[in-house]
Length: 316
Image (cartoon, rainbow, N blue to C red):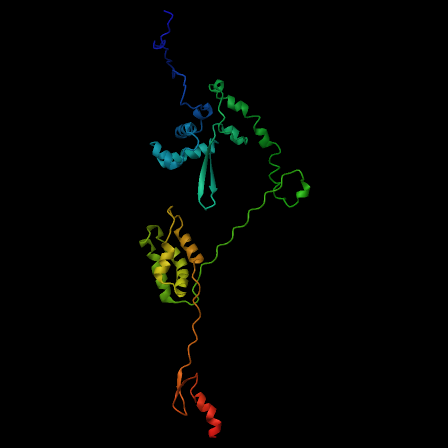
């Protein structure tokens, strides 16, 4: 009789006639600790609360963009985007945009299980609520009073400090000001033909409007064709064959989606511009008929040949 039977049914629990009855079973694995300040938030929608709980349960590195979440849940992209904006407005989510060295822009998503820590400047996404405070949703509020003082104390004063970085002698103990970022160098202008030629301009326009036959991503708008046509005409003026120009613009295109095909073509037309052809060779003087001996000789003007001019004084 002293043997404990684990399979024995538990004592039935009386149901609460006025509200929900909780039957809690302790979790030993695959669970997430979520604060009541999010689960019982009075300003967030049910979609935002559920999405916030889902994001906090995901491991680090999981994709939480709009398309991925819309494919996971029955809500559409519009509802998911609105819920993400709610979480971001209430401090449970932050989306940071960063430009990579190759010019591509990526978005980093940061999830906060304690929005009060984010407002006070302590970003500790791994910090969780103690088990004893799960049932009292007001405990996080009791911890918030010490956090705001840094934001209300002389913190706003350091913000005007960055404007006078040249006078470093006035604040020797302060950290050196950050070096200003170098100004972006302006892009070189597009090449233009030295002499206007309507036929050459028409050939350049036709070449640009048919580039999408080689790659559908190179379907250019009319405004881009007008801007790039003089550059293509400059190539044709320098002796480049239209097939050579087309090959220079369509060869070795990146495999990633082309977000700005006109900018790529403008870069290639500027950086790969062929050199000017050599100057025209000196043409020989035309043939003239000598007035004295009827012999042909080359001279810019008609008259006598060299022999007749040499013997002219002797004859006289």
